[in-house]
Length: 252
Length: 252
DNA sequence: GAGGTCAATTGGTCAGGCCAGTTGACCAGT
DNA sequence: ACTGGTCAACTGGCCTGACCAATTGACCTC
Image (cartoon, rainbow over the protein chains, first blue to last red):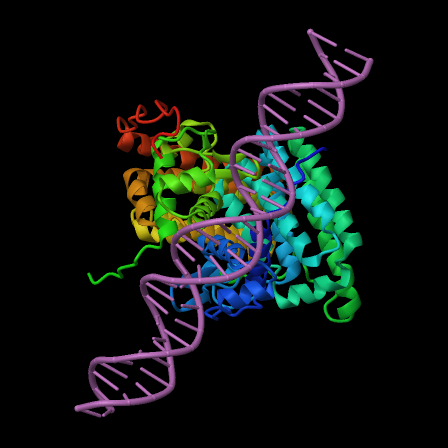
């Protein structure tokens, strides 16, 4: 408790907003963005601030700024960035199950080597999340920061990258459509509580507890998801979201 | 030839210059840099340009900008980073660590739901591998098939894909060069034995055993790797080129 | 049609200024 | 002597407005 307030800087907020749009696919790859002056006006920020946000995204590899020409989107989703062809790949349930397995192992590892400053990073993400549960877009940024923050504790960039990529895979129209049915301030607050449990276990150096808390969190997410899934698609393959149909090499 | 002239943008040049100083260790970790206004004047650029350069470095993780307080160096050279117990370093070693954490969790899960036909798939991969330990290329294919085959048991395409991607990341010139020093029929036969231990634990439904066996396998790979790494770079590690004389502002 | 010209557009940089958060010296009260 | 509050100097965050440099495409000339 008593974590830093964070007061996010404006150019960071702008960068987050544009990044989410790119990841979600609202901005097509190769597409040219409006001119800096227009963009700044639409976002109600000054051009220097907008420029700083764009530089962040350029360093991260989302956009390509060409002098005198314009700003271009260089990649859409994390899936495309990794060189994989076409679209959402796997379904939401598979994604959540995969995250449950991978991230609970990472949490377990993180609990073994967490230092006070690592916990401070998690607390920052929690604090940020608690303040924006009403904002569907901002809460995702905070959620992502928490999960990648855990991976960062291990001090392994590959783990951070994989965690981030798995998270970003939910930024598909299909996933978002389903998510919009059950995600809201209430469910985010529940998720926040689960996050706190994970954070506490990691802070206490409780490896088994961290693993269990993370598994609970992602399993619950899966459950919340499947409930709304059941409502909408009751009648078409009620389950199928796990442990089934793995003939042969499953597309290796 | 005829490479793009690239007319480096000024803020990039400034960022490069400061980054070099940090990597070289001319700026001590934790040290506070001069104020933006001073720094801009010393570097003969405007403050917006200097700010853009600082944002680049902040995104890259070299510095930490604290509002109202100042700019602080957060990490120094890669050499020093490896000297510390924590290594936020990209590289083969890190890749193997990430695989150890992720794949041992997958193996554990696989052991819980393995069916006879799944084990048959693993056996096929093992048989293929035993026949080609002399062929550096073919053995890699079999190795990959075994690891992704385990992920396939869980029946989750995302896990299969992630496992495959992590495996494929070793297909880089740098990794291959190092690998060529210790990979050979002998080491592959050792790896094959470790694979068999994993397969047996999964076939027996022994989750904890499968986890441990996979961990052993990848940890040993890491060990074999670091040994050859030590041979090649023994004596290089100058060690003294950092951690000294960084009082004051080091002439920014 | 080929090739050159030029002006509109766009990103790059600069100058100066105001606001808000941080910090530490200083002071009043206990 | 210690605590707690105040305040001014300093620092990063952000803005306005302007000019420069690279790109691009319409247009013109041959």
